[in-house]
Length: 117
Length: 117
Image 1 (cartoon, one colour):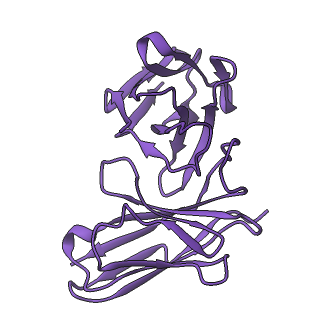
Image 2 (cartoon, chains in turn green, purple):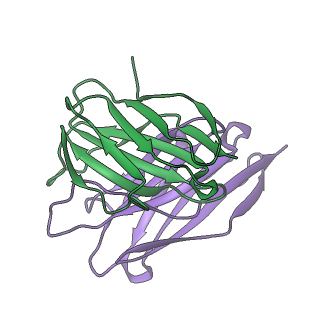
């Protein structure tokens, strides 16, 4: 059974470069989340999609961060002009429903470890 | 705003001993509470969740947690530790906003569990 996959698993970027991180959620899952996990910290929420609609982007740290999910399945997190403080593991999670009264389990991908030199 | 505090960034136990990982939350209303486990280079895996049903929640791999409103706690326990339990554990919360929530997780800082023979 296919879970959530992310690519690349590791990315090294020079400061100032743009990067794109991909998330393939579980097929049919309506909800998709991105989290950022700094070294030694718990994950922190970045943004949320319900199908193709980005309903919450309150956690994006700056306007250099941009996420999309144009067809309601695969999502891409893009970081422009990367800075050293962007170094972290970026986690993607998907869940079956759209929230409401039932709190669906979020299934996490393995993450992309971004290192900015 | 809610937050989650995990007491003890590192816990070490002997194989066969009781595992106790502590989590306290702060929230104006009873939230939904979760425990996730993260093995090296893997994504987060849900151990168990509390969604205002039974206060004692049983999860996978022999873990359980008890929701105590009076203590604002949701501590994770396992009667007998196994070497395979060595991992990092995260407590997380979703705000119960009048019965609706799309599931944005707020995580604690994590507790690394070491199991020695």
